[in-house]
Length: 415
Image (cartoon, rainbow, N blue to C red):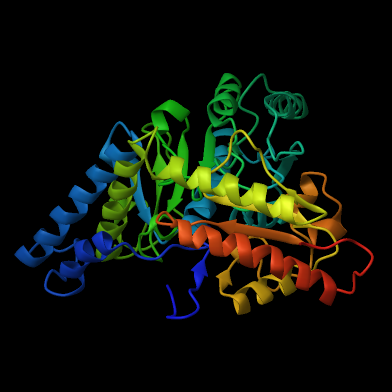
């Protein structure tokens, strides 16, 4: 995205990514000539049904699922997250009866699709435990172990007293990667199913459901150059939850509504393209992006006083560079960056309009006033050296201007 004399740098890819030409090409037949409803029985519908089955098989293979039937197509990450949370609670009540209070364990820095659903479940009589994180945004396995044991004691049960543990694979604001395999192992030792919201991770780091040993996983296509409005929920064979949406018999009776076939085909094509790029572990796009991200972080922190990187420096998504800028209003900074030709964010795109500091940063122990100066730059897969140099020039200048406009004159600004 560029203007002739003033290149505009899109550095908000954690919010959404541009649609891949490969994905668009795959979608076009199902937006035009191949318009059938997969639920019919005539030849037009049969063609659509075969395409849907192929996409399901392909998606399962890309994620390391044992069976295509473990993949369910949804409208995106929020639906997938709500379905697994509500479905797990209903499953628990079906198994244990109404006398045992359902309990859910999640993290303090989860996406609002998880947190707001948990808040709704609390109003419906569900106990929710929010695990703390350390200064890097990591959930500690010992804290999960303690929470599971507490729930067992509270319920008077030896195991299985918790309906679900749900911890995100990668944080959408600071990029920290959580120790999901270790956390899932602990949950299973207590007889509890484990879900991970992998919306921010799929397509950016290797994700294999068998290696993670999860029972459920959410993803959304628009985070990895697929179309908006389509996603998926992986449910391990043998782990069944009630439907969230009632109606027709689509998705084997588990998720009603005519399938978005064009979106599903585009999602799978986009994911295949991303997975292919991740195969080049040592010299692929992820390594190049991570190197540029580190160079950008080092330059901004060296050029500006009172600017601090956030997240785990050792285990994080390759594309996310996040900071707190003391004495700066984050929303003002994002506006100034936009005027300077940089699309950035002050936190999650889903929190736009909120005046409260990021729940992620405050959970990490960052002072709320400092958290108000949050900045997230999420780099594109095809970022160029020119793009990086422009970011290195424009971001420090915008921080300096935002600091002055925020009324902070005592601190030394950027140079």
